[in-house]
Amino acid sequence: MRRFTGNIRFRNALFLLFLFAASAVSAKGIEVNRVDPPYWWTGMKNHHLQLMVHGNRISETSPVVNYPGIKLESVVHVQSPNYLFLNLMIETGAKPGTITIDFLKGKKTVVSLLYELKQREASLGSHKGFDASDVVYLLMPDRFANGDTTNDDMPGMLEQADRSNPNGRHGGDIKGIEDHLDYLMNLGATAVWINPLLENNQPAYSYHGYAMTDFYKVDPRFGTNNDYKNLISRAHQKGLKVIQDMVFNHCGTNYFWKDDLPTNDWYNQWPEFTRSNYRGGVVTDPHASISDYKKMVGGWFDTSMADLNQDNELVANYLIQNSIWWIESTGLDGIRQDTYPYPYKDFMAKWMLRVLEEYPGFNVVGEAWLSYPVSVAYWMENDRNFDGYHSHLTNVFDFPLMYAISKAFNEQEGWSTGTAELYEIISQDFVYSHPENLVLFADNHDGDRFYSKIGEDIRKFKLAMAFLMTTRGIPQIYYGTEILMTGLEHNGHGDIRKDFPGGWPGDAHNAFTPEGRTKAQNEAFNYLKSLMSWRKNKDVIHTGKLKHYIPQDGVYVYFRYNYNESVMVLLNNTNEAKTVDGKRFKESLSGYTQGRSVMDNTTVENLSSITVPAKSPMIIELEK
Image (cartoon, helix red, strand yellow):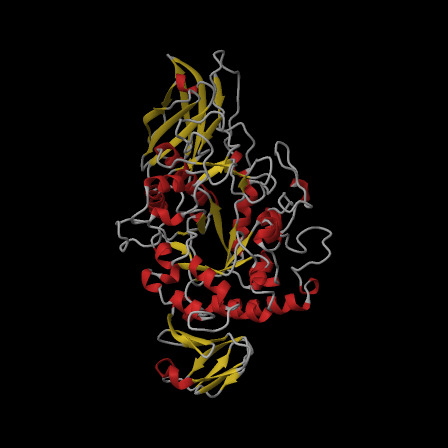
C-alpha cells in the first residue's frame, strides 16, 4: 500500500505541513501525486469541498473516507484515468485534524491519502477590503527590487535570469518588496497591488506572471508561499493592505495537466490555434453574432496561455476554491481579477457570490478594458443591466477616465478637448450605482508610461496627479510614476516595465532615496507624497459628494464636500495664469469666507477672485 500526506512536487514551507510522504509503490502502479486544494478548513460558511486527486490510474480505485463530520457525497470520474474528483461535505461540527482517504481496488487499499483540515485563523479573517480611503500602489515584482539574489535562478525553472533582456526575468522578488514597504508608506500608499506571484514555469517571457503553471504555488524565483504570507503580515503591521492579482481566463500551457487534461473540454478547444478577438464589448452587445462571442470568450489570449473553460463545472470549482484558499491562507485584503469579461460571465458571478459568502467585506476589482462608461458599468451593476445580469463584482477599473486623463492635459482647451475630456467622462457617472468604487489610474503595466504620454512635462504630471487624488473613486499609482519613469509600449512591454532604479545591488542610482533621485524626480516624488499624505486623512475626499462645473476659459473647477467641510479644486490647463470669478460657484462657496491652499499651506483670503498659475492645479480647503 502507498500512503500520501500531500503533493510530492516542491511546495513552500507554509503549505508543506502536510505533503505527500510515500512508502512502497503499489505493485499495480496506482498512485497519488497531487491533491488540490492541498488542505482546507473547518468552519467555512460553505460546507462543500471538491478535491482534485491526480495520480497514475487513480480512477480505477474507490475512495473511502472515515472521519467524524466528513461525508464523501460523490465521486466524479472523467475522461482521463489519472484523475478523481471527490465531493466532500464538511459538517458544522467537524473538528480540525487529519482525514484518511483510502483508495480501494476491490477490497484492498492500494493508496491512502492523509488530508489536513485546519482551524481557521481568526487573525486572518478580518479582510478589511479596500475603498476610496485608499491609494493603491501597483508594482511588478520581477521589476521592483531584487532582495534575494540567490533565488534568481532555481532548479527546475525553464527560464533563467537575464537582466540584459528587457523581456526576460530580472530577479525582483518578494524580499525586494518587503525591504521597501517603508518606502511605500513614506510615499503615502495604503494598499499594494502586486502583479501575479504564482509559478510561471514557461520557457520564455515568464516574468509578468500571467501564464500560471501552478495556481497553488508562488514562483520559487519570487520566494515561497511562506514568504508571501509573511509579506502580507508585515504589510498589515505597517498599515498596508495587499491585493492579489488573479487570472481565471487562462493558464500557462506548461501547467502540470498539459499532456493529460482531466476532461476533453478542460480548455476551450479549436481545430487550430485561435486567438480571442479581444473585443470585450461583444459580451454585452445585444446584437453580437454568436461567432464573435465565441471567439471573444473561447479564443486563446496567446499561444502560451491556454483558455480555461469555466463552463466545465469542475474547472469552475477548481478556480473558485483556489481563490478562497489564497484568501484564507494569507489574509488578503482584495483581489484584482485579470481580463474580467473574457471568462464566461455566469461563472464570474457565481465566483463573486462564493467569495462574498465567505468574506462579506471583501473587494475584487475587475479589469474590464473597455472605452465607454456604459460598457464598464455593466460589470459592476446589479440592478440596471438590460439583460438582468448581476455580476456581484464590487469594483471595476475606470478605463474610460484613464483615456481621458491621457488626452486632457496634452490638448488645447476647447468645447470637447482638454479638461472637457475629464468633465464629459465624470458627467456620465449616472451609469454607475456607486462611482466611488471605481479604481482610477493614469497608467498601468500594460500601456505607455504616463510621463511619456504627457511629453515628460512635470506641470502636466502635477495636474493629473492632483485630479487623480481629488476626484471620486480609488486612485492607483503604477510603480515608478512617482519618480517620472518613462516607457512606450510600441518599444515592447519591457520598456514600460523597467527595473526600479536602486532595486538591484550595484545600481548606479537608488531612487528609493532622495539622494539617488534627480532634482526633477524629487520634485515629483515630494509633490505626490504631499498629495497622498494629505488625502490619507481627508474623509471629505473619501466619502464626500462631487460637484463639478463645466470647464471655462481653460480652468476645470470642482468641489468635494460633506456636511462638515468642502474642498475646492481648480485645474488650469492653459499656459497662462487665470483668474477665476468666484461668483460662478456661489452655490458651492456659500458660507465660506476663505481657504487654505493645500500644496503650499498659504491662505486664500478672497474666494471671489482666485488666480491659478499657468498649467497648475490648486486645491483649497475652504474655511468658514
